[in-house]
Image (tube, rainbow, N blue to C red; front, side, top):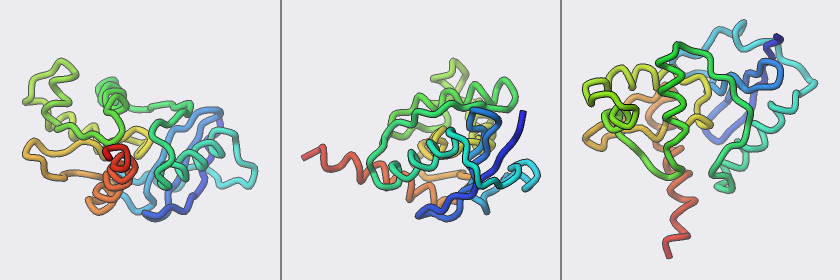
Length: 168
């Protein structure tokens, strides 16, 4: 398996994309918490694999408010619990938010597991596409986003701006 990395410019800063063979394995804001070492991102190549080209295009469409659902082959690498949390994140509809406690309940866990869910959420290696920005605190506050709360607020604004015209 060959790990390849690519940098993408976005309205919210540089994003590193990582792919192993034919699957996307990482989408990281370059300065985010838990940003992997550059060795884990992989080598930068001019030849762009199909999955990276698709990810770049779909992220561009997302930021332009033209894409609500990502259609990319993903490979989630983490513990069994982390992968379970990340799969649950993928079920949160575009433009909606859920609390950490409700997310735990949706997974069949007690609300007391919200901290564990939040910890796994913070380690999500495929941000934006696996929408960890859609999870908020139980009081409705924006909390805990590895890319920073300003980016979380901006990502939610992209989604709400895209759905607002349909309300009228």
